[in-house]
Length: 69
Image (cartoon, rainbow, N blue to C red; front, side):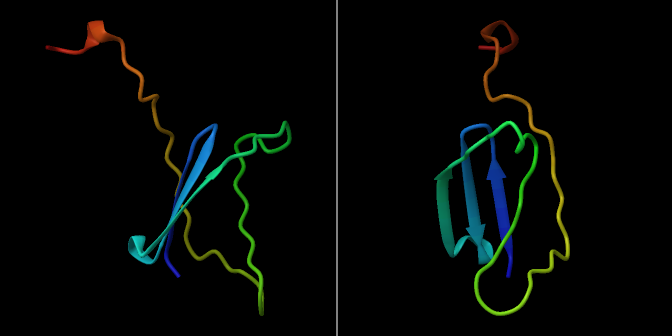
């Protein structure tokens, strides 16, 4: 299973198997959930995360003085 997850303070987007299935949901940020992501599954057997990478992203908002028109 291939899963790409993008999240910010208000939403989560997940893409399964190269984008064959996409999911968007609201994100809950409780005081204990700060900076954490958890994975779970229903069905048979445990879940094993083989590889995970996280990148910090800057804000999408820019100052118009920094943009060349």
